[in-house]
Image 1 (tube, rainbow, N blue to C red):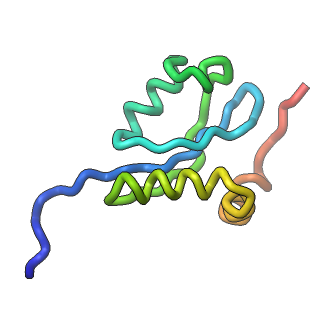
Image 2 (cartoon, one colour):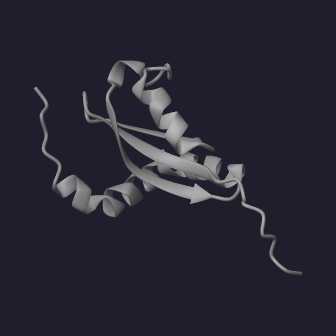
Amino acid sequence: MRPSNKTSQMFYTYILQSLKDYDNYIGYTNNLKSRFVEHQKGKGFSTSFRRPFKLIYYEACLNIDDAKQREKYLKSTAGRRFLAKRLSHFRANLVWHRK
């Protein structure tokens, strides 16, 4: 069987960093650009008070269930350890502006 030439729907697991409190938000979506704009405009309940954001990491999946599973993993202790290693250079160059 030959692979299809159809463009597949992509699903993204992403991490935003609040430039207000420097905490991270982890989520998933099928339209990363649109979802980022929604977060920046304060349309998400859990992120509206933490604006503005910087997109610091994302992964693309071909299946929504894989993206959901990845989101769940990244929110776990093991997932946070993975992210600490994966983003170690970013975190090393981070300038903290906490009051």
